[in-house]
Image (cartoon, rainbow, N blue to C red):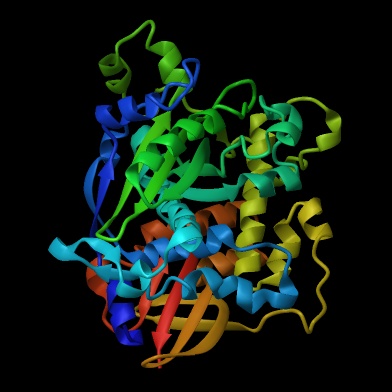
Length: 429
């Protein structure tokens, strides 16, 4: 597979089969303890859906980049993209499959590949999942739980299972979502990402994921959570998804599921929601781990948003914005000189402006310019605006219709933009 063929594949929406039905619930339950948290189906994620691999690659690159590594920035920023650029192929019936090169990956390397692909797919699918349980369009920001722990967004007192003892028994990400119809109101969810090469192992993974989603309490309540296991088999790529809705489970004892789901949008009481229209984010202090008491939901969400904006700034090489928004623990881990700072570049492709770090790489079939960064208006708001400006700019990524739509590829380049403004541009040269 040469460069142009690889770009054509990653820019094409291909069919991916998703499983989230009662059979999956039953198979997962066989591998879970009797007292395990109850997982339920996500009907919106069941069945075929069209997915562009480029959108998966963007989520993978932004979610898995190590932070605070300016001296090796180029390698880290683009590794998740380049190693998987030629992994995908169009299989029979327009389905997403592994390429010949992907099928040659075996044994432990296949396991690692499946796990990392699982992150990209799960983050992408979580955006749709949040829209279903919020019953309306939302702008989603994904925050690594470990980053949140390190930066003080979550106190150790908020973990029902002690981190020091359980190690991996916590979910991978926080999902902070703002309602498009109710600006300034944010909900908090959890996401656990799994990946494997066969379906039976996906059942075991999801059984473990249930305990992980049930491990965090925020403000004395357990957030809703999504678990996704992506199966990278030779013939096709599929996923299995279940959700943990603790508040709905509790309320089901007093009401039927149909009664719960029939509530009008915005009236459900199973959301952990905060409103920054009443309290500006800048007025909220950072969470202090030394306080030794549970963290307030509003304060935790504000700190997590700051961390997500600092991560975006670091992604695009915007050091000024990073210093503005990074919680103190994140700033303390960065020691940059002018020589360390990556060179930023603005790229305009098909009506989309992206500012970020650019690398040119020689590949079979020609050179490829890879730009990983942030949509221009979000980048400007991060550097010069207040929290209201940043939130409005991120909201505008959807409202300005800058999300790259499947039918609008007017050049040889490939563009992907996520809800939070993070962006990927692949320019063949």
